[in-house]
Length: 106
Ligand code: SF4
Ligand code: F3S
Image (tube, rainbow, N blue to C red; front, side):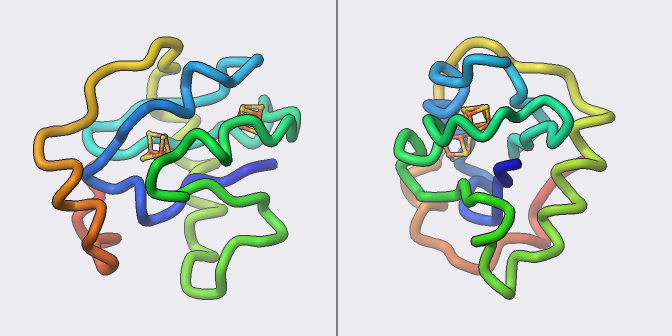
């Protein structure tokens, strides 16, 4: 499966949503997650994300490992998003911020 990581927090560009053939993205207030039970490992979303937030599960960086469980947990709670929408306000500013995991809203 593929996993959305910290870089997406407070950006939520949603370019990833448009290319997913199986609609496995779920949307929260300021973050998106991938449902690991739906993802078919097509890899298409990886290149679409302007902040490179998406990794194959095996390639998730050491400091982002908690996002694997977080994607599964939140995908079960949040609604599916099937269409691209505007990024969050100030997404371009937040794209430069590395440490923002604690700002993820549920
Ligand atoms: Fe969707 Fe493919 Fe990305 Fe999985 S790898 S989330 S199936 S676009
Ligand atoms: Fe997030 Fe990147 Fe998609 S910022 S919403 S994972 S395009």
